[in-house]
Figure 1 (tube, rainbow, N blue to C red):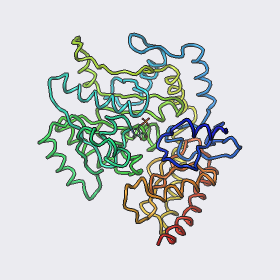
Figure 2 (figure 1 turned 135 degrees about the horizontal axis):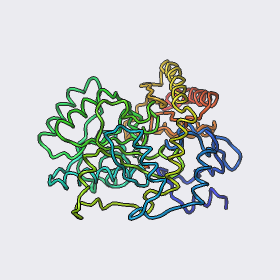
Figure 3 (figure 1 turned 180 degrees about the horizontal axis):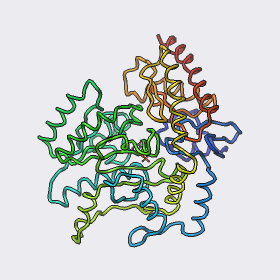
Figure 4 (figure 1 turned 30 degrees about the vertical axis):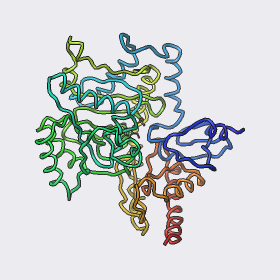
Length: 432
Ligand SMILES: Cc1ncc(COP(=O)(O)O)c(C=O)c1O
């Protein structure tokens, strides 16, 4: 049996609908923006391997730092013990953040960083003798696949089998010029009538919900209202963190600082699983008490893993060593030119760019869950055939490249997308 056949026999893969024919592609090596499969075929990783990679695959500096750490300390439990990589990372990360944030909690991935934020918000109120129980979130949000994270995510095809088990959440639309006043009224009414503990949102770009982009100044209006009504605000920067929006964090575009911040994915440069929940000192204070019932009883076996922490430290250092923000600006500027070109195609709508992310919608009549739009499969297969890893979200095509991507590679991604638009036109004609 080949590797792919054994894989198919033994392993269920994430977000991969069953197919009798299709196999997963065995990747044997990766370097920079390139992935290499077992047959020697090269793919440009134009979505940073599910939005995790920043500086390129197998980066020599991160490799070196991880290797050094492996010889010192691979792991130690994080309750009652600590180590230099965890402390250094906390210090370095907090230095990158606004002084409003004073402390962090480690976990393993994006979903767990969200769970921590939700549990901490509820317990923050509880520890102060207040009963605030509900959360507010945006429609089309995606915050992860654990139960709390699913509950604050939009009710859609991903969450459908579990709806009966998800706690109640109030949802509002992301703010636009047109709905801002109405959204503010709705919020004010909710805050007056309900015991809302916190408002969770993906700042500036909603990822899995379709790369929906919105303005920082609009979000600021909502956040000010939350502050007025003492509702905790939780920024899920699992996808937007570490430069994707053109600044280190999407919240750096905001005037109002959210109370809690969730990070993962790019945190380790895309090397190792690690989550961080950072929070303001008022939240930290609520847990600094001798009363053991007020302890934050949450943890994971691999909390604060030293190898993950050194990968994250190395990745942060690379931002300075490699002038990463210049690279991000170059990507953005190429994206803006390409966006102009895309605008001229009939099958394309809503072309949008934020930082290093470009997205657009393919016009289709499909009315079901947007994610299951059949055009997705056609495009995904076409891009792979052409040696590009792009994974449309339903009818939404997006590019979210590692910052190391060179101009030629990015141009190749654009060229293949243009080629795919011909395919789309012919498919849409075929289906009337
Ligand atoms: C905004 C956002 N939050 C949370 C998550 C969940 O992260 P993870 O897949 O690491 O659990 C994701 C994953 O795509 C995400 O995009």
